[in-house]
Image (cartoon, each protein chain N blue to C red):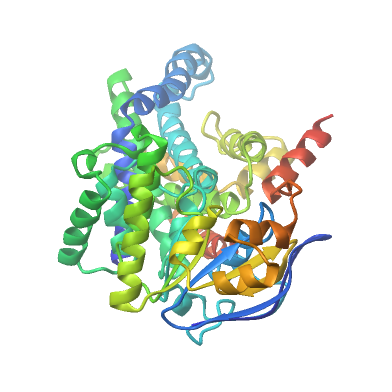
Length: 248
Length: 261
């Protein structure tokens, strides 16, 4: 338990210490929120769907959590390159605990970052429809964070260099974001696209966030919760297995 | 304490460690010497559960690193050849993290950390982030960390690389102290022959993945008819300079470059 805690604490400490990075990481979500929020707003309104800012804010929160958590997992690569990974791998602690500590730490950081964006959204004019459901929104943030921190760890366990990381970011993380319905509604899509969006774990996360924050859900909240929980468990197991196979 | 029999490690076509056997009894200081790329670090990685061997058998305190990895990890401590600190944590935090991973009780952890930071003259910088440290300070911290818990076997992979003579002296004095008072078995590699001569009870010389000689410093000198250990080493391994073979990540980088073209 102590080992899990200290590795979790390490991730959180590193996050709170990198203030410049926190500010920098606000840039991208802000662009999506403000430029898309106000730019696409009139079109969305005309189509009869209401305020686009209200619609896109949960998507931008989901995106932030996705990027932060996936990156924290993939950052395993940095620990490998700077050598710290060796220190944890020779320690007399079962590797599963090391993986859990790191992953939970990464997920916590992603949830904190998501909360920060939530506050930014509120400042930009976003209003949750029912305050009582906001805690449910945080539950979804945490679930998204665990899913993608575990996925990141699974991938990071095999990464050897920076090029590999670029590849993952461009061909996995970005598609997950664009196919999730963070930016557009998932109904009335072309058939092929619709299949892909349903295979994307983030779709259920973003839909869950919308259900909790603006009261509209497409898949139903029970489906969202069940899907995310199952994927989280599966990816944690997969990530732990991949992590246990690391060779230096 | 350490038993190695017919150990082989291949990376693709390249044989890094080629059928070596040796044993280190409890309480011995054993030096593993060899030119760059001879297979020293690969052997240590296999002994410390970081790499599985291709074939052959390994035993640490009667335990098999390939099958009883966790129990084996409880037996040893290691100072790596290359850096393994977390630059975003302070010196004290790096030590505490290590102490927790090795389940050193809290009180002892703090006492030892203080003693070691003072011994290696890092106490007044204990709350500085490690990334702000100079190369020598990082190295000293790395060594201090290796001594935070008392293992049965201590692996030191070129521990004195980049250390000033003062710290080197402290290091070897501390190693000898641990060896004498707590019967810690020490397995070390170094490029400084006079260090091996001074601290090691027995020395193995490895070259091209094979052990070419093993014995006390005196035995090695007698065998090669030389005056000093350095001369004996040169007589055993020749005077050509070796290139270190590319590590797996270098190879991968090359592949990625080819692929992009």
